[in-house]
Length: 251
Length: 199
Image (cartoon, rainbow over all chains, first blue to last red; front, top):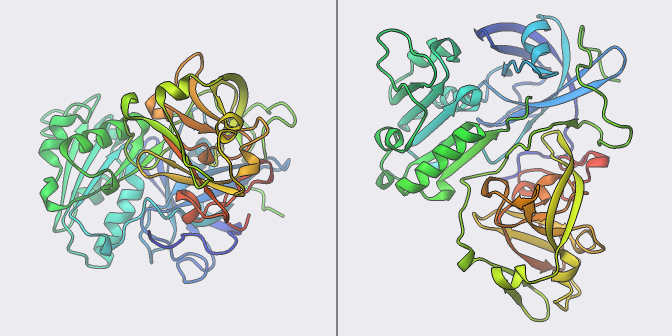
């Protein structure tokens, strides 16, 4: 297995919010300015890792959550956050937080759901909703290092308005093909898939097993269960299917 | 001293004092977090085995289900920060399973379908603190939650409660399992917030 992702003690660092971008009405990308990031000491992360974020209220109350890193290794730290209406942290991060505000971050964390060029390919990236965030980090990293590994991204969203990184993915580089599914509503003239991901869709989009593909599947539990079991049924070896499930926790 | 995040305030009800470890919040759901596809093993080929003792020991599903069972209600705490209160389980105590084996090892590596492993001290598996659970909420344990059977060690972070568990390897030394190899804590006590190595 790859080496450990966490070396020594992970300490909390104060980050200052830089630019913020609204990706969709519910999703915001936050640039976080952190001394030493990106750098060999504090923050040379791997594509697919996450950070822990800690907020402190003026009465001392604290809340911590984990967020996937949206930026590529070597880029300034960015996270993309989806607002969950009954949440405690995500409404603050997506509605209240402004450039210049501070919060605490520790990481990078996680060494399983990561991609490095030596892992082989081609790559199948399957994203449900905000599960696209760590896969976007992988795509950006691939572009940054000039990797030629072929990529197919299958990205399922509820509606066109819910598609995150729309322009960036539309401009996807050579060797990256994007297939989209919109599960609830579709704009007029929609030519992509108009249903949830199923076995037939995977059979059309996924690389043939004979190509030795490596799959990264990220999204809500039901999406990940459906895609991962569909890939197993197509003959993908379980150890070539990396999954990250966003639990349906109301968080 | 943590800096104050302007405008941030508590939006959740406070859990009963002493009930939830630091850094956790209470959820009513039962989130699913696991690495890789959900395995589906037929009960006819399922076994639970304990290796590394004086003699290897193995139970078929029917033999396992013929062992005395316990029901319990307990709180569980996931390293991703959710805690779920008053979850009800049915399972076989590790006291029963380890009691069938002669050993003097101090640690185990639990192993599961799909290749997952996690390490635990034997002392945390005996004394009525750990089970191999096959029932949840009055019904069978669903595959997405680790069925047909999972380890249940509720006093440690829940990644130690290996889903789809198939056995234990007794060890003289504490060897890291799957998440522990990726930098998660070797022991994982939620009350001491032992999330990552060095915590």
